[in-house]
Image (tube, rainbow, N blue to C red; front, side, top):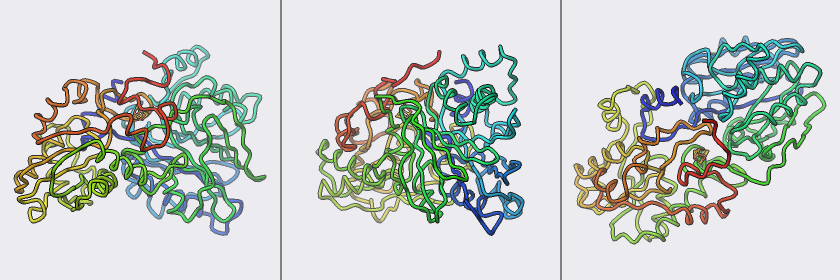
Length: 471
Ligand code: SF4
C-alpha cells in the first residue's frame, strides 16, 4: 500500500487507474521474423489506456527469449530498430501503470527469467492479495527477489513448481497458491500460456488472426491487429498455445464470478467486449438508468469527455434532451503534465478541458461523468462551466459513490482521499459547487449490466470484497 499511496499523489487525473494491459501472439509460421513483435506493438498501442508508465515486448525464436522494455509510452519505448531485433514467432507484451511495486525500470514487464528448464517471460495484469505470505514462504526456501513486484513472486513459484513438471502443470499449482486478481501471460521458448484468476476479476480474451492465436486484455486490441474475438478466457482456466494448437485446462471452478465492474464504468475502451458485454452498450444503459432515477429540469446534457460520453448519450436519449459537446478535451495532453502538487493538478484540468461558451452560456446543464474520486476535478469543471455562463450545473454520475479502495490491481486513492467516504451527498454537492448531484444506484447499475451482484466485483462501492485481503 505504501507504493500505491506514493503513486496516487502523482495522478494527473482525478480517476481510478487501471494498471496494466497484456498482449501475446503465437505465429504458426511467418515469413517476416519480426511479425510477432510488430503485432504485439500494435496490440499494446491499442491497450495504452491501461498503462502509460512503462512498456515492453519479449520475443522467443524457439531457442531463447529476447526482451526490450523501458519507461514511457509504447511509442517512446519501442522504436522501429528495436522491432527489427526482436525476431521470433512468439511474443508477449505489457503496458504498465504500477500498483504493487515501485514505479521504476526494474519493475517494468515482461519479466524474463532463466530457470531449470530454460527461459520464461511473464506479463501480469492484476494484483495478488497474499504476496507477503508467498514471499515469506519462498524466501524460506532460499528465493531471492530483485523487484518489488508480485509478478516476480509468481515467477519464483513457477520456477519452484516446474522442477519435474511442464510449465502448465507448474502454473496449475501456482494458481492454487496465488490469491487475488490476475490475467497472466507466460511465454517459454516454445509456448504461450494464458491464465485468468478463478473469479475472473481482470479480463483476458482469446482471438484468432489467420489461423494464429492471440491473447489480450481487451477485444479492442484484437480488432486493431485485424484479429477476431473467439471468446474470453474462463475464470480459473489455463490456455496453452503451442505448435500443436490450443489446449485448455479448467484448473479451478469457482462458483463465484467477480468481474471488475469498473472495467465497464471507466477502464476499458467502449469498443471492447468483455465477458460478452460490450462496454459502450453497458455505459449507455447506465446513462439511461440514471435518467430514470433523476428528474432534472434542464436544457441539455453534456459529458465530461471521453469517459462520460457513452453514459451521457444514454441519459439524453432517455430524458428526451439534446446532447451537446459543452466541454472540449485536448487529446494531445499526456502524462507530460503530471506534477505531484495539488496546485499543478488543478492547473492540469484547465490544460486538459475547456468549456465551449457558445454552447453552455445561459443554459441549464446536466453534466455526466463516469465517477467521482477525490472531487477536485469535478469542482474545477463545474466552476469552468459557470465561468462560461451556464446558469445551472447539475452533476450526474454514472456509477454509485466510490467509497472503498481497490486491492485487485487498480490504483485508487487512500480511503480518506475518496470524497464519498468522508462526505455525504449534500456535502459533496456543496464542495463541487453543483446545483445538484446524483449518483447511479447499485440496483440500477446491476440492472444496466443485466446481471446480479454475484457476477461482479463492486467492492469500491459496497466495501464487500469478493476475497479476503492480506493485512
Ligand atoms: Fe474493480 Fe472496484 Fe473491484 Fe477494484 S474494487 S476490482 S476497481 S470493482
